[in-house]
Image (cartoon, each protein chain N blue to C red):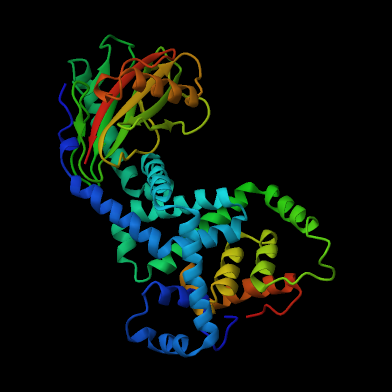
Length: 258
Length: 176
């Protein structure tokens, strides 16, 4: 530490934040209280906070942090957080394999045409612990529990590309697959493939998931803009969200976040 | 189609979230924004980075509140986040610093009075992220070697070695 006798910067910040109130901080508190230099630095921290508040009002701060939190929480889980989801994925695939057999007899979890070689999606919901999984309903909003994630299975049929976005009640669109760039390659074929990772929708209210299967690669930003347009045409009612104005087949699911 | 029943309840959660944001703002805003400004040297980028850092705290609120030192957690996360942003920016970072140096006012002849933290900031681009992080925590946050080692999950000799390399590059007595 550069300062041998004075209280270091981080400790001063902790003192300023009321974190060193216990016996462990007694010596630092005593020093800072008696030392002119440390006292001056403590006052400078108070000035720093005042300048911050003058520069960035609370409402702007809160809106910005909420926006950033929404983005963070709807991103596919990063690799370091996929330990459980990957285990869930394995189970999810098993569930989907059996669901695929059910598909022929009309499994309600699988959307799309039931004819041979047709396209569709299967959204599997998995809990935060190794519990039971289920298929998200294609007919009604699916209520999600705390920490539940969704994993998207795709049967591309004759299509070659897949992209997916979600949109919340406030009209915030989040590109999911891919996060940037062109659609992911998928199929063609009858085989059901799961998109990598899993997605946790957080916040409150409803969230609409849209999966687009297309014959050409789409820019996910264009899909996101189309989702925003559909949201505006539906007057912000996600349950009435219509077709996005992009080429390809579309599949929608609505979730109710805990 | 069923309307979302959860839309109608949980009004208390909003209030709680607002309180959380208010607490983050009034207790830690200056510290986090200051760290982002120090490293990024750009008000807009610093505000964006600060929002990302507080969003992490908000998303993991229970874990954040369980931290023995929220200040240390925020300083660590904001430092790491900004250094990663700078790394992603690559050559742009060094280029901007060189332009800043050239743009120093001419009415101030002689060697500029550079505070230690500015000198540290200037040297960061020469090193890997771990050395950068160690240097910032040691020289700017004035943590001890042991504290830096604990924070970064490294041994004290490893951190000492990193800081000695930093000191050598500086050509001045930064040695721990």
